[in-house]
Length: 107
Image (cartoon, rainbow, N blue to C red):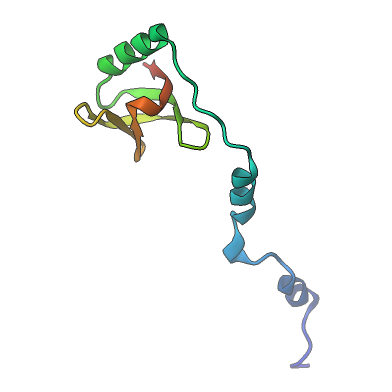
């Protein structure tokens, strides 16, 4: 019976190809219409700047930022603050100040 496959082996042939894992998610993200960047008011910009200036490395924050395609939320610890570069690094993600819509500090 060397040439016969078990039902399990036969079923495995028709399982989705593992290399395409996540491909459907990627397609769904690309298929979504592009979200436009929101222009903040002067008051919103002032409040955002005050919050950013008060941050220190090690703070736990929630940030809503623009990726160029849509807004994304990230929760995590600030690893680095690049004041001259106008950017934050949170959980390995570099975020430019200009891309931040909201940032909330958690104690």
